[in-house]
Amino acid sequence: MGEFVKRVFSGIQPSGKIHLGNYLGAIQKYVKLQQDDSFETVYCVVDMHAITVAQDPKILRERTLEVTAAYLAAGVSPEKSIIFNQSRVSQHAELGWIFNCIARLGWMNRMTQFKDKAGKNSERMSLGLLAYPSLMAADILAYNATHVPVGDDQKQHLELCRDIAQKFNNDYAEQIKALGFGDQFFCLTEPMIKFGGAPVRVMNLRDGTKKMSSSAESDMTRINMNDDSDTLAKKLKKAKTDADAIPSELAGLEGRPEAKNLIEIYAALNNSDSQTVLNQFGGNQFRAFKSALIELAVATIGPIGDEMNHLMKDEAHIDQVLKDGADKARIIAEPIVQDVKRIVGFMV
Image (cartoon, rainbow, N blue to C red; front, side, top):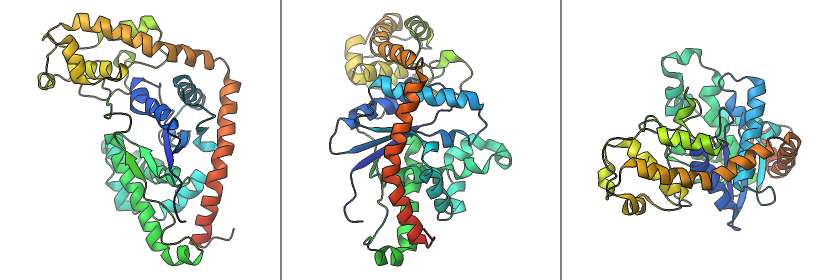
């Protein structure tokens, strides 16, 4: 295929409330990436991944709209980026099946996220939950995306994507050359781990050893992106800390997961780093620090939440953004998947 177009792909599952971890870990980076004219940016709401576990159809639709509203409210622009929901572009599913036949069962069995979600009940889990990393590879390679912004918990999936791409290139090397695509058809997608600063891992407000999650039972464990100012203040006031003062050095945060989490949240919202925050607040108790954090959160997150809530009142507009984005996504994905079908020997 010659030189690959520099293209970024990423997506968020609409399987729960969109929260601060999604924003700092992903959406904020999406906005920065679209400002780099050297990349094409493709951002998806991965609703097909969501149904690997049971979903209420009405809630799934609502969450899909909510994730899209979060993209738009945070500054992801339909003029600068392609924004769509995965199920509207059939090439994802088509390529996902081909990759199911390329990937090895042993690769899937080693995926830690499946083990974490399935636990001792793996026999009762859906086949989709086991195979969804193959669909994730299809999400990326349907656009031959050269780069994917990832956190530590997604690195294994990207490694699998590279393995699938490499195996496809090797298994069909003769056909790839015969059809004029050179030595490889799929690129080996590169991770973007530190783009826009160090990776941000936002933790549970009540237990700093657990990641902030939309699946946690208590809403007090997370900051939802559309929480109002009073709710933000309430959650941060009640966020777990400890009795010790804020240290002046990073080493003083070791063994203090809740303290570390709040310091890192402040740093991320302030476009700063943890040591700078400690320079400012070191020696203070957390009560004074929380007041400053609440003020910062209301100023930075509050307007995004307000805009999300405004957008959610106009579902037709959000739906049109997704439809238009899907049309643009198909223009890229359809010829790539058609070529894959030709390579594997399908009649097209």
